[in-house]
Length: 376
Image (cartoon, rainbow, N blue to C red; front, side, top):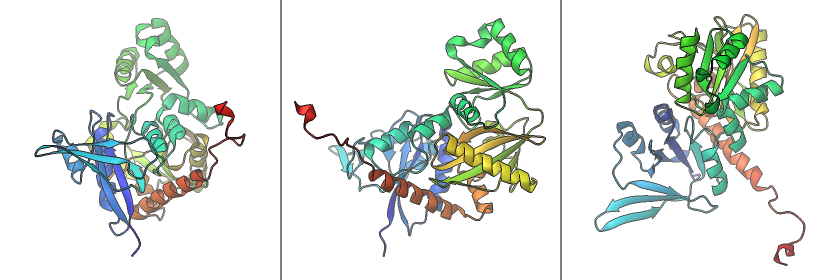
């Protein structure tokens, strides 16, 4: 019998998307084939404490993590990367866990989707699912991402960005400049967050001031985008490393005025049309643009690319490097309708991670200029 692949699934984290991560992880833990994988649940509390325990997901969902239970991670190439720490009669116990073959981060938002955890995996020299450090950071920062898309000739809606010290809510001239360039309505978003957390639609100056304050409560940098009148929201899943491919597109019909956090996760009344009812030429174009966006940020593994369709004009809205894996999430649903079931999708994502790591291990890490010069 072939040896099972040991997969550590990471979830929770310090982001405002903590709860979404827990639900996504639950779907993945349930779908991983126990005949192929030995699954290691690794939870991260809201405070950033790691724990490695079979019941880690339930502990985080109940917000009941036993005092003293935690895990340590060693950021260096080694056979054993995880150390479980617990309490027992007479003191604290330390247990090195068996080597992990591949890490599967399901950490949405900051401190997980933004390149931080990916950098840790690189230091550990272990395979991991999804984008690398650069693409993860670019995928998280909506401002830099859109600037890069624009530089690659991809269509994006007009936008402005501000740092906290430039707070336009406190400067009438800046507010006037926003209104003159973008008009109303506008969407105001934290630059580094997902799941529509902290996003507001502003229809007038009073709305705009409130929206700016909310966005700055989540991030030091915000983006203000021109609102498109009654756009259709189209999403495409992308999968692959050197040769990425796009799924059939889907369409979101929000239950609220726009697809905010409540509409996505709380109410459960938003409608998903999978596949999207689009002319064939639009389907082909949106898939082509999705792959171009994926390549533009040097992405690998997976991403969901979101579009706005206004009449016949497509705009790339954003790219998410760790898309949701909940029961209502587009990423796995789009692959399922494209002929790739959930369990097979997870198989491919894990294999892509293993393949990438194997190829990277063949790269040279020393300059061929002699070995003694630095000792002189």
